[in-house]
Length: 168
Image (spheres, rainbow, N blue to C red):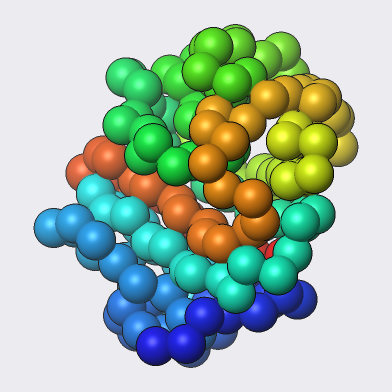
């Protein structure tokens, strides 16, 4: 399959398996389907590969999370990494250092707007949860990637998270 390009937008409006739909690929034993206009993720990772021409990107999406009791495994070539802890707060990585962010807690029963601003030139990223910027100029987890090449969303529980309106 060919790489996706920026700008990229997915509303998950066509019901069915996400594997191969609009550039998405899945890995894991769970499920990744589009249903009722959202991506439903259960014990699975979904990713989309991009053409590596962008050195500044903004990723926006709506997330209805399942809280995580333990940190996920983070691939070595990851630039931005965060997860939602059991208290509904984002735990983000500033470099490889864990940072517990302060904001209005997310809910497992409703969606929240998430925005990630990534700058490959300055090797930094910022995170907005709802309408509040909660992380500014965090360092990349790894500096091994010099342009935007992939978006990966992992759901490690047997409960279902939803993602919608991915806009890059």
